Image 1 (spheres, rainbow, N blue to C red):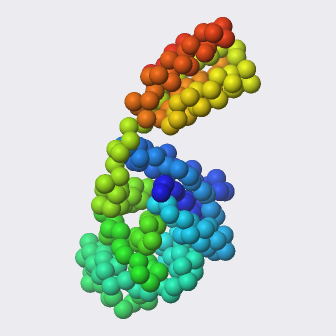
Image 2 (image 1 turned 90 degrees about the horizontal axis):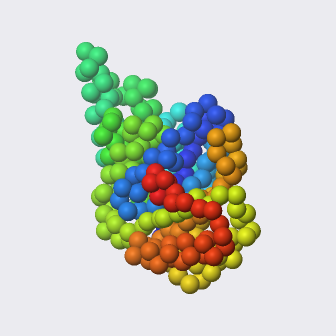
Length: 266
């Protein structure tokens, strides 16, 4: 079981808006000792959203989906989730109550009385139509809920709404997974080295230290920086000292020029 993220919206793929969800979700998970295993960007095509969700529902991962749960013609996520599961959309009773409460609140703030049966307000109830069997995710920003079904959690595309809703899901349903593993990493900056020459050392460390991964991040030379590779190990904190010592010994044996990576990179 891993964590996945599906980010839906043409505006991301066209460049009209820059995605902020990926970086933030990684941070939200990291604060809880968790990590993101995969992410996908999907435009506003119903067929593609549906096929993506069918594949995702078939797996065992915990998946967050942002965007497309409104009630305008370019919002398709609710319909696609239902199609992927082969169930109808139904108006969730709690979602209906939340939406109508929001309608009343907005009208009161404007000094009027809400007409819940007006065409506009009936259209707003579409936002509470979820795949049959879904439950609500509370929205602390405007009370319009998202929905959850089969370990999938659907939230709006607006960060001010999406992020606290994702945090609520994790804290409410997955606190038992928090900080089960203490992940860490340590690395060196290796100057003027070639990855091919370092590959045998990397392979040997992974073979000798199960549970430890070796990573290599090359950088080209710039006007202010020499060509180098950030070479390191990551995994369970308790496993790293011996693996890191093996990495250091291997670099020394190879006659490499290296130094500890800055703390910000660790």
